[in-house]
Length: 321
Ligand SMILES: Nc1ncnc2c1ncn2[C@@H]1O[C@H](COP(=O)(O)OP(=O)(O)OP(=O)(O)O)[C@@H](O)[C@H]1O
Image (cartoon, rainbow, N blue to C red; front, side, top):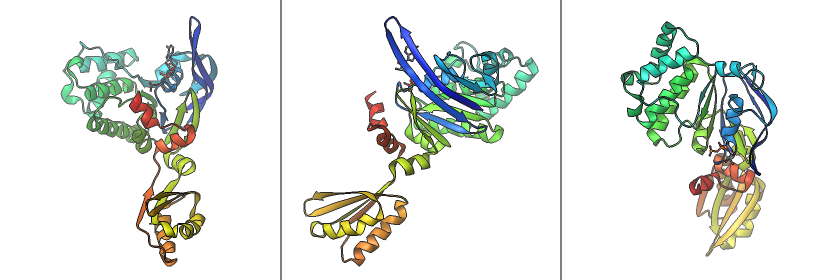
């Protein structure tokens, strides 16, 4: 569905230039749900705008839904749906008129636009809002209308730029329910950008981590977490038991570390399958006569992955932004 090689984009104005995207390769298969995850300014939107043919790349090539973004931009646009960060619907129009106009714009007959519009109102829970002016909709309702507008011509590929930014958790969950339903019903391929770690983790089948205009990791969330961060188990024992505890714990993983806290020692080890290793560690320690005062398992998040890759926390960067 998408085959992109070496995409770059440099924005130049006067003497300043910004290398927003510095060589992105991306493959997306039919029916996949892929999230581009990265901090503000990482180059996610610019990548998306190049893939949708809205922005010409400085260099690199891409085929999207069977059409070349540079040579066949009109075909790309006809075959995809794109929902940008700002909503595109005209404020003074009614929801239904917006939908029908958009359908006509994509070349549907009036009857086709009506049938498809009706279907989308139902799928996206907008039926009751059909005659409302767009300006009176809530943020979540407007976002759902944006999605309906992006889907009016039944594209096989949908790009969503930060679909849920600024929404409250309930509207976000609701929006996701709709996105996942569309996908289940139509097998639509979806590529979206997000800086919500949990969203990428729970919803996407594949996470492409972007930082400073480059792809720095590309895999499923469980694989990224396993390969780049790993589980950590921590056991707290009496300070006197530390040397023996280290001896017991060392074979169970890697990166063994310890910390002295008053009369106690906290031993941490990175391991695979921590949920099973933790009880095993406790058994072995107790079999060696070492009392375990506390035991915890830390399973990694995508923030741990980002930290392992860049030395920075995505969560903290977002909070500071
Ligand atoms: N039209 C433009 N002119 C100049 N610089 C731009 C332009 N558009 C984007 N940039 C710069 O390119 C870089 C990448 O921006 P981009 O919007 O792609 O990031 P992003 O990962 O989508 O971030 P966000 O999560 O904030 O949307 C940023 O440094 C941004 O300031």
